[in-house]
Length: 111
Image 1: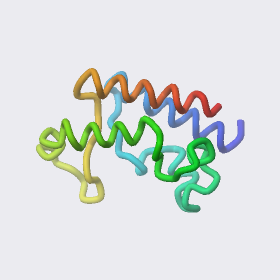
Image 2: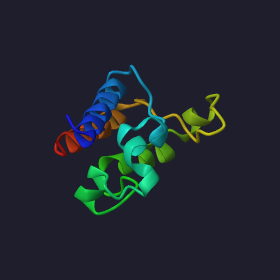
Image 3: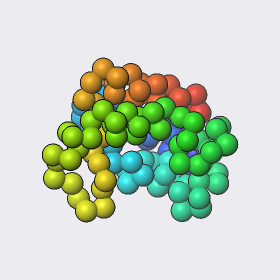
Image 4: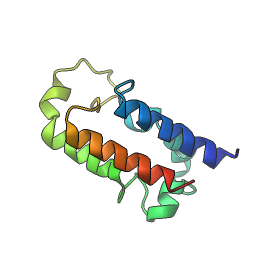
């Protein structure tokens, strides 16, 4: 398995754990693809190669962030967050779950 496949599989595993409420999303801090590719401005990231955009634009992940910032901001502000973390995103509602599953499907199509 090469670096790209490994990072995609690790990212899929992260999102499966999020859907199953075993993990929360810390964005780039715990994304295997980001950890592998962000230092080079996502140039060879499979997500960017698929969408043409860095930062997971044009993916379900952006919908995830927007949803959390518009629907669950009060829940995030009540949490004690590490100084480097702006929010903790997890499954709060059925829409969260649907978006997370859509992102798993998106990532799976990169394999």
